[in-house]
Image (cartoon, rainbow, N blue to C red; front, top):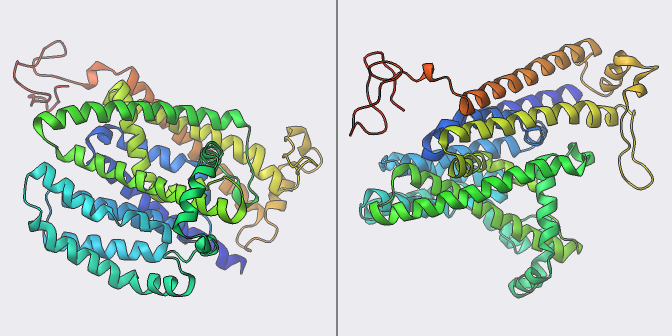
Length: 439
């Protein structure tokens, strides 16, 4: 059983790795996050809470991959691939996603939203895509509809989730009344904390100020996103919607729909458990859309070049955060070097606690109840590899920060030499004899 567990964990992680590459592709399709695409990938692979979630045995890694693939398929439709095959692919991906996790129901409205966005930027008539949209819905319903129909028949809810089923007796009116009773401040706080980092299913946590650092960065990006959307709305009013802006709108719709689904779940938890809370790790399924919005928000305040540096800075902080959480919180707790205090808080770890057992003792304790493959020697090799890769991600993030905020102009050749100016009317980019790009 331990060997099977390890194999399934690795399989989940590999499936999620495909999803992270799809997130990179999604970022490259959006105009405001295109220059930050590599930084976005760095952030996602450095995000410790995300990696904990997709490394366990569950459908979360598959949900991330299918949701990212579905969003990409919609971007292809928006960008002009309105053939029948594109709509078929979107319908199949949505049906597979709905069979993976019920919370991906929040993405279903994106199908008509993509059709509308396609019409807005291409100025084509909606009936041209109506047939494809219908086929996509039919395929999704034929793949996953049977399961949801049975869930509705047996539990009275579409999702079939146990808390949702328990709250069914309150009806729609009871849920609407509960919206005013939920303490949304507590919901936002718990959602942010569990989205940033939760140390496994022992629900470990770190110092509150560490969460605040990432929350304030997210707040800055949110302000920038509002500024960007206001600016874009003015441009769209005068010259119409462009394809890169349509893809950004799609990511914003996906994230908004998912947040609404999370808010609904908070109402259900309040009705059944009497507490105001939310589980932020559900948002990992649309980590690509969230990262796109994060980069776009920084672009709204600092420009697209510096936005890449801002995202890289968040990735660097994530690497540092992960190194701390692994070595000072998770490993000490799971090896018995720390424990919960009578107050319920987790005792702090001090390196002096290693006296008497050493690194070898820690590795031996980590190998307990694990696969026979994971001997203390193998764990030592994995630990060294983890240190090198994480520090490598940190160094590369710093390199991206330096390139974004302190660019070397020799890396940006223009026609006629470093001091030459592009000709008037040349636009934002032009060709040079040396293959460079005018910026």
